[in-house]
Structures are given as structure tokens and as C-alpha cells.
Length: 134
Ligand code: CO
Image (tube, rainbow, N blue to C red; front, side, top):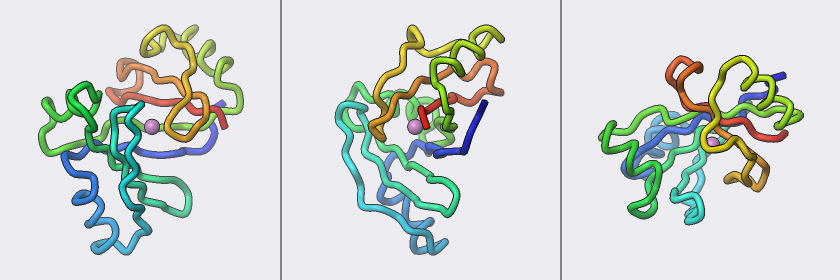
């Protein structure tokens, strides 16, 4: 059911600063910052051959990342995202196994313009988990 790892999202107080260790330090391809106000984040994308790392900085006081940084001031692993061929079927199967969606579990359009939904960390070893329609 699970397909490719799409991205690992890491919260950071300053996404550009956070990207430097990947670009200057590790020689990775790192994007300019992209503001996504509808998601409350500024994102710096680190492109890897098989997936992306998304460095998320809060954009606005209502940003979910702002709340995360209150608990984790230096940043930390925010979520992982897996691609699935059939998002609703994947959701229903996981819910039947006891996984708990964030909100009512209705897919929303995510940061890549594709339907996504999130599952609460409970049941995923403490990691917020995103599924994206492939
Ligand atoms: Co994501």
C-alpha cells in the first residue's frame, strides 16, 4: 500500500539557515525559500536522489510549526510523507487498524498541489505521518 517516501519534514526556526548545512556542508541541492501562507510555512527544499527534505519555518503566529517550535525550540522531525496510489483506500485501511487521522480525515490539497491527509503520531511511533496521493 505505501509507495515511495516523498519527504521528511523538519521544523526549524530559520529555514534558510537550516539549509546551509545541507548545501554548503553536505553539497546537496537546496532551494530558495518558498512561502506557503495557506499552510503557514516557509519551506526550503533539499532535493535528494530518492526523496526530499523539507525545512519548515513558521509563517504567521497560527502556523502549526510555531506551536511545534515552542515544544522543540531548536527544531526537530515534524513529519514524514509517503505516497500512496489510492489515498482514500489507504486512509480507510489504516483507520480500520486503529490509526487516527488529524481532523476528520478528509483529504486536503497539500503543499505540492496533491491531495494529502495526516495521521496523528500515536500509532506511528510518535511521528506525525502524511500520506499523499501519488
Ligand atoms: Co509534508
